[in-house]
Length: 129
Length: 180
Image 1 (cartoon, helix red, strand yellow):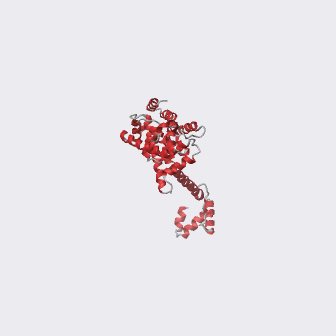
Image 2 (image 1 turned 90 degrees about the horizontal axis):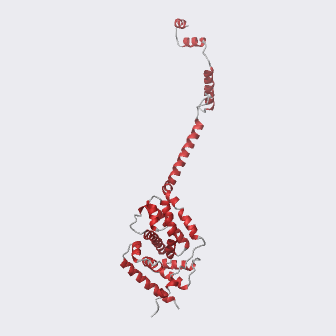
Image 3 (image 1 turned 180 degrees about the vertical axis):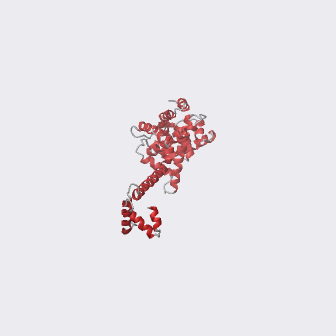
């Protein structure tokens, strides 16, 4: 009958035949102690992709709004500048409109001419004078 | 720092200090526990990091009914079993069995310093079913009490004794075959 080798050579067999790289356990303890931090931040790790997507969306919307505003803004622009830059205003209309805007006051003769043209009687015109 | 001091620290709200106490007291022990199953140093290192993440996450659920060391070994052993199941699943889609993969790992391991008999012993252990592998390792190398192994593996002492007996005889036969 053969020997029970697990028993007769147990001292030799129970020895640890594996080894580890130099200084491994010291480094391991440091690495494991740092595990607390990422584990504590577990919630933030979970929401991080969604938060970054939301942030990207907000940045895109803000940038888009700013761009649209900066290209269509009329505040701070004079009425004349607006007309000059507007593609939809014909050059003839522009000249007329500018004249109207530039006119500081309307002459009495023009008013009388207008009233006669619209059929107002001479008496009425005389009274209003 | 002993188990009692670690538990007291945790209960007093010093969670990080308690965790550091566990790291100091158990990282090396758990490493060797894992290494006997996975063979490769890199695999053992990765698995150990995962185990400590689970320990930190599960620490609030530790009620102190069990001993701290059996609770920690239970987490580690479950992770090892999950790892071995994954290896077995991978083996289904490859030409190499789980046991021959693990045996090859021992032959290729640059950190294996054992003699021929020790090499054959560790190869024979890897040919055992998972449960027998766990029982044999905890009993033969760590000389752990059956009652503690029963808590770690959630198995009755009677079933463990039977498993150890089968495992012991199989390994003995395997070693006798390779001896001159």
